[in-house]
Image (cartoon, rainbow, N blue to C red):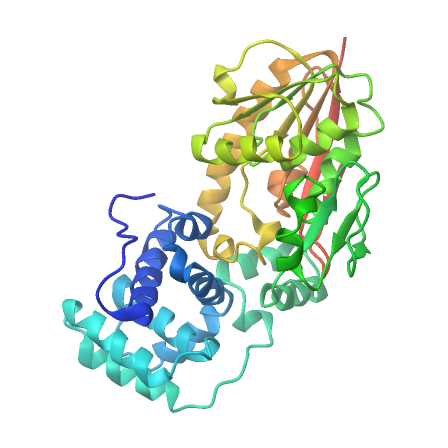
Length: 405
């Protein structure tokens, strides 16, 4: 988290604090210094849920919201004022618990330090005087760079489908762990065997249940089961497992269930903060393993099975991370691909002869995915699959190799 991100409350009431926090966070997200998830991780607990609803909608509806106020501007607005207008208008349109005139008053007050209070007041009132309708076409929903790229790689029908999904909250889904039964009122959802997933209309009840606290369920999207299911028919004899990018431990726990208690697990990640979550998840699910904070190049030894859940563009999980599409660029794609190749090379070195290397991502970009499903020196490609986002699951990619003896 950047040191310039205040993350603190001011003496302007909840509405003012939410608007201030969100507009500051948008500036940092747009500059690539933090992600939406990181901004929410640092949000004050007393308005985190309100803030999450607001910020997700800022990025979901940003294109149409921004078009609605830009037509009243004679010149380009500063990033600070653009973030403030985006935030204030999203509050007015999508947070029915606040009065629009109150939002305008708070936004005008915040704009004074930028000497733009009269401008912000005039623009907001002009936009709010117009009729508002939800966007329906991909051209009015998806960021231009993503839209242009996707039209090269996907059909017009798929692009419009993705645009519709972008405006839709992801379903609440969970994995049933260690053969746990579905809870009352829940129903199963499609996933990759041998893993079983469910959904429930009462997520709060499930999260507060003793069964959840005891490790019967793991909150996860069914797409996460693709990678480990791809490896499941091949890895039963593995006795050592390394997950290079494990946090918060979802795929590691799936692999642990497949291999049983005798497997020796090393769960590594470069983020100490996220490894705390991994440790909590291991404890809740009563799984043992060596949980370390380390970069791939700092790990030694060889392992029967190596998992590399690679950092990626996140374009397959745009419903959960809508900021990812607004942070996407060809430059950022090239940078993350270079990092992926570096991790994959190290993962190959850490795989024992005859062992298995499983890589995965939550991207649907062919450059990231099919590029890694090709030849890997000294390995045989066993399987590879890209899963496109749908109403019931996110997008994902996975590939499995075996190292030649």
